[in-house]
Amino acid sequence: MRLLVLGGTHFLGRHVVSAALERGHEVATFTRGVSGAPPEGARVLVGDRDDPAALPAALDGWAPEVVVDTSCQTRAAAEHAAAALAGVAGYAFVSSLNAYRTWPPGPIAGEDEPTWDTDEDAYGPDKAHAERVLAAVLGDRFLTARAGLIVGPHDPLYRLGWWLDRIAAGGRVVVPADALGQPIALVDARDLAGWLVEMAERGQGGPVNATGPAGMTTFGGLLETCREVTGGDAQWVPVPDAGLLAAGVQEWTHLPLWLTAEVARTAWDVDTTRARELGLPSRPVRDSVADTWAWMQVAPRPEPPAGRTLPGLPAELEQALLAGAG
Image 1 (cartoon, rainbow, N blue to C red):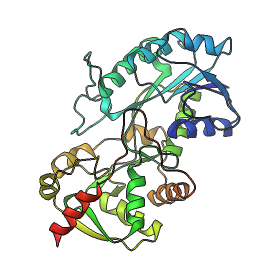
Image 2 (cartoon, helix red, strand yellow; image 1 turned 135 degrees about the horizontal axis):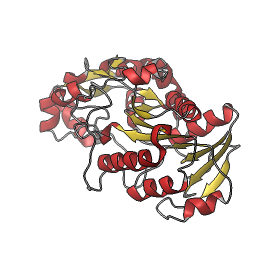
Image 3 (tube, rainbow, N blue to C red; image 1 turned 180 degrees about the horizontal axis):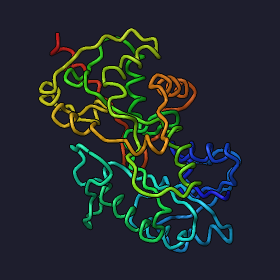
């Protein structure tokens, strides 16, 4: 099949292209052309999704049969895709749990939870708007994958990557005491990518909470796996939520994946029954961590997407916390 990937040079998009090529599809990518090349074997189309004429001009008669959309960041991008691609047989769209009006803190009991319906120009409302616009023209050929935490090789957001680097460096490592036993869930980008291609092939429709099963590991379990994989001699220095907040530690930013206990209990509680029914795989956490670490040994430090900074605990803040912990 002729499969168009909107995106295809970053993280999840790269894995989608690879999965589609492995399944024998004729693959094209549509990007702005500023973030490198897609995997070898894909046709390269260039243009700005916010320009209504760009996608039709780039296609230039090449008619995709199915689409996987990993790059929609604006309302205009969704509207222009809907206009240009309304006739495809399947369209798998990467949305986010942020499309839900109640998340965080959640919980998300299923895909019928309310999504944003405001005109606010923000990540969650924009994703929800894109879902509505594309569903209106594609109907039951449109699948929206409301993704949670995505990990794996080629991750430019450096969340799991920061923990791997810090733990590999060894010594005393500040960890959030109240989060160590918190069940969490994640999805490997390669699992999600292959599944998205399959959903597009099938013309599968509807919303899906696209992350791992609730409780597949714990925060502490993930950190222990990082220590095992890196072979470091890191020693945990658990600091309670109250101490982290008092010191100015920012949730999710300074300590990636950390949310205070009050928020975490419900934010990680996402029902993924439909994802499991539709066959979204969930490889062992250790495999995801080990493969990410292996990739980090040969890859340069990631450049964050425009407008974002890499996460991590500032050295001076870490030293203050370690000193306070004795």
